[in-house]
Length: 493
Image (cartoon, rainbow, N blue to C red; front, side, top):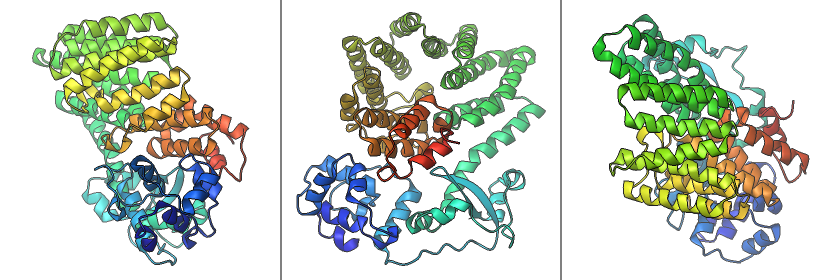
């Protein structure tokens, strides 16, 4: 592969990748062409000498193949959308000699069930290190197994993985990479236990922030489990705590209710989301929190939209946005966020001109803000505006515009915790490719959605509907991986 990269010709690199012995058998041109949405004929011309000079096209190929940026002959963006584990796995692939990877499991520590790209495998972890990191409760209660002779075997799907995938998982250090993923869940469990024993403003505030972090990271089940005891503790602090803490407790009640409304909207429960949004607004009003009221207004618009009350949702979003007149970062953020949701509502009623006008206004606010921010857990900024332009194009049933906007977005430049937003980019891209009968790119984006936010695929109607539609016109030779994705998503038994 290094010899192919040294030619500075993507066609040569592509041919070398397709025919590399690591795959077990050659990947067909038809399948590889689908990775970037071109025809088999076009790929054949590229492999036989037609040069790719366009930087965006070179970048798409580099990302599709997972080529580490420092092995390329052209400049990639500063932040790659590929995770550290994937980068390391790719590096081993491109730099190593052909040969079987070392798949031996550690003989010390424990085996941790980990979901990787929708597959469950047992990964060796260091038990002593886990306890030193404060993850003892997970070691004791999460179903880890000591690697004794009877159970030191990876899950069945390990046998179906390619050597490259095994190398990426074990050689690339997936066990170490799993530690940060486990830490938030363990920290939430510990804080909830502390909150039950002795509720304080400090640990309630930490848990509220953790709930918003988890929601943005698309860990919805974690938020679902944390909110009921958290809300009970906040109510107790507001009702029974000292007077000096009551205003702080009201701020927390507003923020926790916002998190609940987001979760309920995501789950499709518009009535519950409406109730949570109203509770957030009341708490913000009592606390004198104007930006809390803006956040409540945003969630109220989302809940009304989910209930099909489009006119009420639109007037709520527009009125709340117009009531914010400041030029400070918080005012720019909330006016921008409310303008974005109103643009989606306009697109859903097929008013392209008004949707575009509102998106342009939101873009000007994002430019004044000075970059991507996460004030009030909004992720508002230029990248988020472009993602909303994609969603508006989806609402207008315009797949070509959706993909044109997608090419302007470097989803890897987004903060790593914004997995929900990253997943939405891939979901909208999948929809657009599906509308254009480009099923293989659609599948790749759905697999990316699952990799980034598996709970969004398992519980989300949009992803499951797309998978179902792809299954209805499946041609198995051209769609490897679709059937297993459908089974993991619950579309197939």
